[in-house]
Image 1 (tube, rainbow, N blue to C red):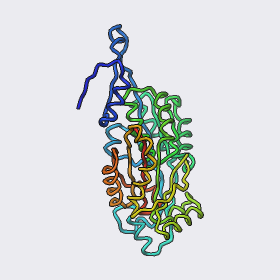
Image 2 (cartoon, rainbow, N blue to C red):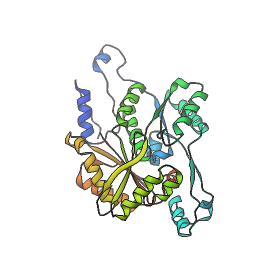
Image 3 (tube, rainbow, N blue to C red):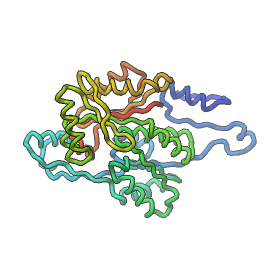
Image 4 (cartoon, one colour):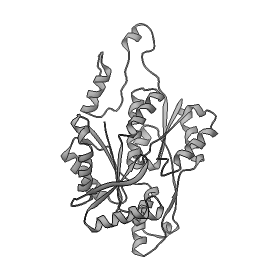
Amino acid sequence: MKIHIHTDYPDEVKNVLKQTGQIQSLRIEDMAKEVAGEESVRKVSIGIVTEDISTLLPKIIERYQIELVFAKLDWPPEKDLPGKNIYEKLREADKRGMKIFPKTSQAMPGSYLNAFKKQLKKFDKVLCITMSSKVSGCYDSAKQAQTMIQKPKSIFILDSLSGAAGEALLVLRAIELIQEQREINEIIKELKKEISKTHLYLVFEDPKWIEASGRITESQANWIRRMKKLKFHPIMELKNGVIGKGGVVFAQDTAEALLKKILKESKRARKQGKKIRVIINHSDNLQTANKLKKMLKGKIKVEVPFISLNPPLFSAAGPGTLIVGWAAI
């Protein structure tokens, strides 16, 4: 629907629209300024750069002209194993008893530099949203690239303190703010507020993969194993940029465990009348991802923009991993 509204309270109208549906674009004009002959519409030209880690769908990348940079994967057995994706290949390697674990590294400064240059040909400013600096070197790579460019003041870099679905939620919010014609400093200020309200949960089918990558400790991996033996569902959480224990849930399966976790943690926001936005990522575990989406929609007013397969970087978490990000909007 296209709606044209005259109001003295644009912020209130915007909030009502957000609760009613999803805003594709929003333009606010000041009629008083127009009558006085002043410019009534802000002209904002901001391009987005982020990593493939954010798991954005191709249609979102294309529609909003987002530039991606890619993390690196080093796993020699990949080319010799059958499978449609890296996770099917990992399952096959596990069946064969292969003990060579994937090695991953952050995107290089040169990749960010190229992305910045491309965006500056189309936009006046560039907003770069990176994976948490506490678990990856992506933020540092982006900062290095900023020093190499001719217009460093045109580049604005935000550490998401998250990743995957959590990072994607921040990108979607950035898109909305850009569509609302917000200035870059306003957008960054708003996104920094959103970081603390963005939650990311991880459930590992087998913790050996993520343990081998060094992203969780041996103690954390053993905790996951003990809880699974007791038929509980251990949930890890990326909080303040670091992966840690997110709690244990008694449930029939992973989907129900994550449903219970989200219902509990979002209760306050839902009481305030806020809608919950959820993004689900999986590592060759689409059935569970779809089940969780269906359960969420059956229980609460939730928006699920997309479900996506994790990029190769998340091969370090192993096949079967489920990652869920949510935020109140």
